[in-house]
Length: 255
Image 1 (cartoon, rainbow, N blue to C red):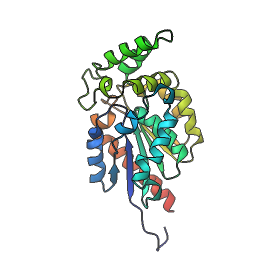
Image 2 (cartoon, rainbow, N blue to C red):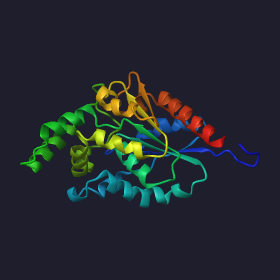
Image 3 (spheres, helix red, strand yellow):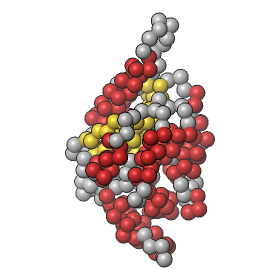
Image 4 (cartoon, rainbow, N blue to C red):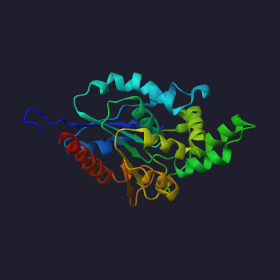
């Protein structure tokens, strides 16, 4: 690094999953701030709620809304730090789309880029092309009481049925069975990617990880004894992997 260069700080922008409470990233943010980083987790529920019309359901549309709205308000494009984008669950798919749209980010972290086991089974069970309204109502009813892979009802998840039912149903049916298509988008990115999944969740299944392990720019981490909310189940472990990975990238770029 040249003598005149000033090392840039590391900043993280976290996109929570659909229906997650705004404080779902609190523990992860605390761990990263302890390590000297900046951490921002905008409340995306307003953005989610504006896109409940079934005719507008698409991760790309949500990504465009965020780039021009919530992220623009935070000065992401003009940030002087090395900024990394993080997405969890459905937020991971939106983060992937944003990484294609914006050149503001040094790297992309995908936390549990999958739907929960309960969500997957419910969507597959109730998707009915001949009677979509009935399927949607049954799906919402089941998801309102669904537990995560550890058998608990996630206290940090808002009531999906009461907040974003149409949007959740639309995104879930859009993504089920098409995650491999989404991952093929990773090959077009020019930034490195870190994928972290909990060992107890569908995000760590061989079918999920196989296409990722074949991509040179993607590092895959599976965290033991963690489920879909891997950053809540193991915040210290996740933060340590994120910090190590980001430091290595910054070191390479400073040479």
